[in-house]
Amino acid sequence: MHVAEAPRTPGPSWHPQQKTRHLRCPRAPTPSDVGGSGLPVARPVSVHTCHIRDSLETTAPILPLVGTKVITDTIMLAFVAYLARQHAASTVRLYVSAIRAIAKENGKDLSSRRVDLAVQGVARAQANRTKNASKPILLPHMAAMRRALIRSNLNATDRAMVWAAICLGFFACLRASEYTSTTATTMSDGGLRTEDLSITPQAIQVTIKKSKTDQLGKGHSVRLTTTNSTVCPVKAMHTYLSRRPNLPNRPLFVDSCGKFLTAPRLTRLIRHLLSSAGYPPIQYSLHGLRAGAATTGAMSGFTESEIMKLGRWRSACYKNYVRCGK
Image 1: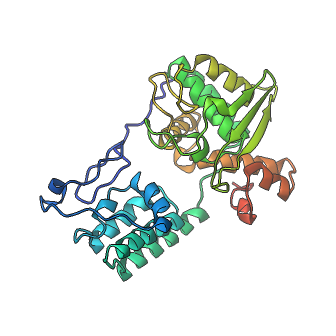
Image 2: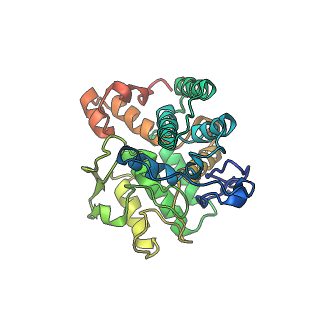
């Protein structure tokens, strides 16, 4: 049986003057990028938008154009479409608001009914996707993926990395951003590193430094113990760490070539493994690991508070992840 990664599509950086996408964030636009006009970049902004601008500059070279005549409705609409591919509607709305705030300080009004309607459209589209959310990945799926992974053509190090990441994502009920990297060469803010693990022969203690519900970085610890079965996060992590390349100051999950494990790559691998096991791959995604953990907890008789603690949910939104009927 042959399991190979699907061809990688270029992504995920965007430039208003380019239709191509690159794995790394591009440089800021130069005069040649905007037709040689030599348009000035935005002047410094006030403190209350600086932290937003810092985060935006890592993904969007549109910011140096703020305050110039380059940004039009068409560019803003393209930017919204780009963000919608990988961000929630609330995040898209935040980015658009931040750009408008920065532009206003530079004397330019970027208010637009068309852009507002586009953001509303993103919210509606994502709401429809939630109704048709991917199926949860449960223990039978995990066992099937392990068998398929053993038969795959991946080398021993990469097999160990993929299996350890799948097990950790499932048993620790992790969000993708908590254990995968932004790109193959860029670490996620607050992502796991080897020093965030405390491991013994019988257990793993995982320290999550920062997450969606912990923006201040107070940290949260998750303890996993052996399951005494073939699907075991402790065994998987021991095997992976014994083979992991010795690369300091790198994310926890690094392949044999030194590339960081990203969410899109792990999603492709999960779908390949499930497909080889006879499951329709389009019905599953990386998000299914977290949903699978919540669903397994509910099927095992966990209370609502226990499920919320498992996934570090602070509201009833955890119910969107419990999919016992699927």
